[in-house]
Length: 214
Image 1 (cartoon, helix red, strand yellow):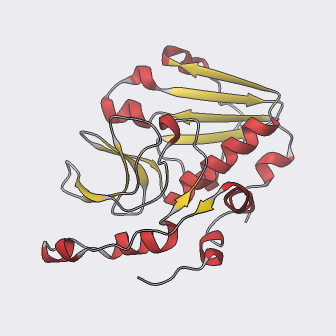
Image 2: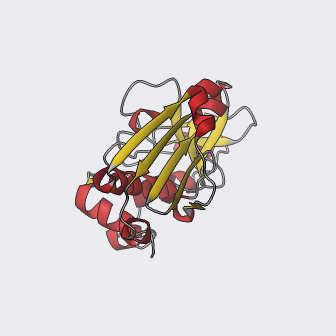
Image 3: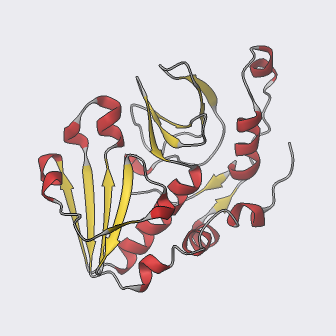
């Protein structure tokens, strides 16, 4: 396996996420992958090798949704989605959850239970969301959590989508001193709308969203 450069990893992230990974991330030595069985079975192994080279062994603080997310990044196994696609399981969960964290064929980061649901369009998007949640929690004057049907009362009018998190079923919105994090990935995975969650951060300094620039 090629030796990765940490600069190569950080160059994929915005200024906020780079600071977050540099300040709070821990890089452990990733496992060497033996993918001979995958190759013999005709399973493409390049994505797994590239993920392990770039992200393997990286430990980050947990996020506010999905019980924190992966405990650390590590290629664990292959998972066959109900669509027939091969998914790469990328690490043990921080707590016990009824799904695994995976990377899809197009690089999207998500969860798989009976079905596969992307949360963010890339692993970088997930890391950006962790960094943004850290800033939001640190600098907001008030945090309000909405669950179940109360999620429908959250007004996103006038807010802009936070593009760097590359949200699919987990999205962020900002504007006027407000940050809103919306999570519906588990609701889609289990057809359980009552599991939707929203966090609304108010009193956020104007410069916080701007830290998402590259």
